[in-house]
Length: 292
Length: 226
Image 1 (cartoon, chains in turn yellow, brown):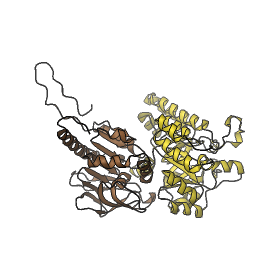
Image 2 (cartoon, rainbow over the protein chains, first blue to last red):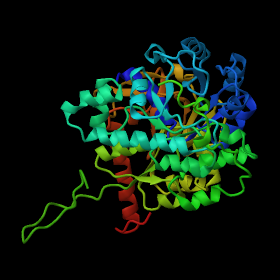
Image 3 (cartoon, each protein chain N blue to C red):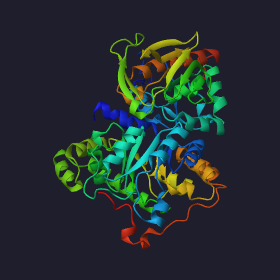
Image 4 (cartoon, helix red, strand yellow):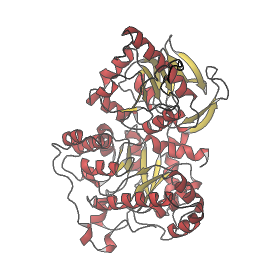
């Protein structure tokens, strides 16, 4: 890990134990900041709307991003399409603090992700398993999040991905040195990073959860399963009382092991977003299978 | 425990002089780099307590307020009745060390934008004083109190200390501004030693916390009850 890379993961370290909220405009950004979000994620439409409307989902417009940057004092993240390095160049130029190369938007490249080492701005990328996480880290991602199933309001996929990563991490740590090349081949991940992870028993960058968080309990579940922070997408602004729900999720992330606090924060929140049953969804509607 | 084994007496021979009990340290664990601070303390032989509620301050000699988002942590301080207990902790002689967001929370005055703060350290501080993440940077600054080598400096969307009161000692400067300051038993850095391998600032803080422990011990006639 180069010392310069420490600046990128360092910002992710400062966001630990927090909630990062999807916002589409300045008003939502202020609601998120007032609720105690550690960062906001700028995007054109929240995942539930992308899912409903269809069409090509792209980076948010520079005007919207500018408006969001100017309205809050916390770090601002924004999404780019997988492989769309020019959208990333634009965000870096605008002073965005973190770029999410995200499967929630329509991929621009079906083969390659962005060479994230080429940027000064740090990147976060989604993954469903350890191999995918390590490939993204190999490309220069400074923060990993689970993909979950964005816009579904259903935590089942984020749980699957957190458990998968945890399980594969633990397995790596019991291998002998001469078994690591083969493991690297199976994981389709860079050997040097596989070695580092096997030695340390954890990812070399922070690991957050995303995709389907709708309630304070969902957020605390992700934390108890090993996530270090939680991204909340449609779960806030598709609920009936975004202010209260946002606050409650922030508190649930901090007090994730304190059931008495979880009871308290889960009261009086109105209706959560309506969820989708992923088991009955057609494969082509899944967002998590984009990028690999 | 680690570097502070308990003194024991074996048989008739006199044992070693009892070493003073290590200071009890908490890390404010609402959000941010609290686990990294705890890891540094562990390397120094101290198992820190994670503080999420005021009750956990009981019996501590020192508290670290970590880096993170000061606006987020401030909401917890105000809404979960931690604000006054933290001010009281300092007033009653507890040692404090704040990094980055922690320095902001402890300051007398916060600007860019203005926000409420504990006022336990007589400094004025500008949030995000260097700018956004693209202005985050590395460096090294000399610090005569801690000797050679220079302190490695990781500045992440760091604040800038724009004014210091008469009792505030500037222990290190960066780009002509105070970056490491001390007032009594309160320490602050605008940078993040918890992101480096250098443990000297934490060791220095443990000395202040040990003094806090002794002072309390004297006050209560040997039994520590803070």
